[in-house]
Amino acid sequence: MFSTRRRRRRSGFSRRANPATKFILMGAGAIIVIGLFVYFIGQADRLAPEPREVRVELPDAFKE
Image 1 (cartoon, one colour):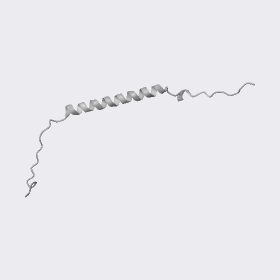
Image 2 (cartoon, helix red, strand yellow; image 1 turned 30 degrees about the vertical axis):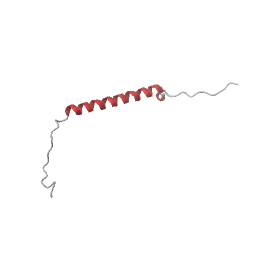
Image 3 (spheres, one colour; image 1 turned 180 degrees about the vertical axis):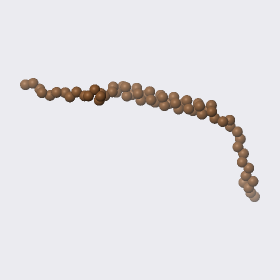
Image 4 (cartoon, helix red, strand yellow; image 1 turned 60 degrees about the vertical axis):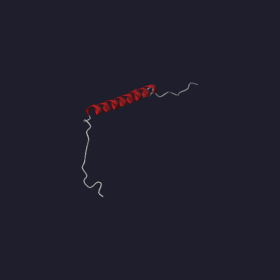
């Protein structure tokens, strides 16, 4: 007469996250990575040494 099937309950520790939460976390991670990239590029520009001419004498470069 009565069905004896029972649903198994999941453990409280194994709850699945909302699918939207996964995308929000991935988006936040991407924004952080891009922000850090831009920050470090700016730091590299600010901390770079002044460009100067480098000259190397080569006495036998154009040997005839």
